Amino acid sequence: MKCVISVLGKDRSGIVAAIATVLADSNANIDDISQTILGGDEIFSMTMLVTLSPENRSFNEVQEELARVGDELGVQIIIQREDVFQYMYKI
Image (cartoon, rainbow, N blue to C red; front, side):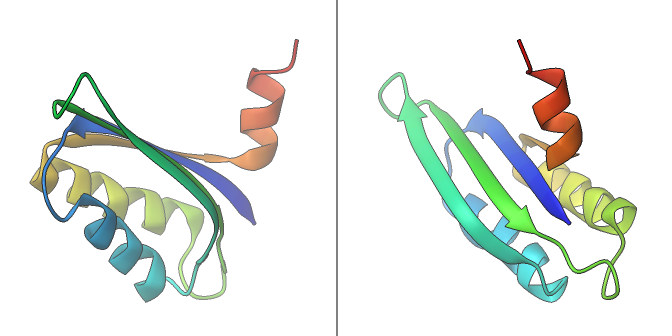
């Protein structure tokens, strides 16, 4: 299952590592990743395209774990199924 993960928050060390760990523990694959720091050193922004393996962890379980990590890091993490994401942003 392809998914889009969006991350936004104050920049700090360990954000990418924490999210990648959740994905690795879920046997997910990071297909593409883009990140930037906006406004100098203030705001971290990252978008990932990942493939989940539902037989290891369901979408909802990964979503809950990413929300927990987001709370710990003080960042907003949103995960959406790619088909829903594509439908929402279709012109």
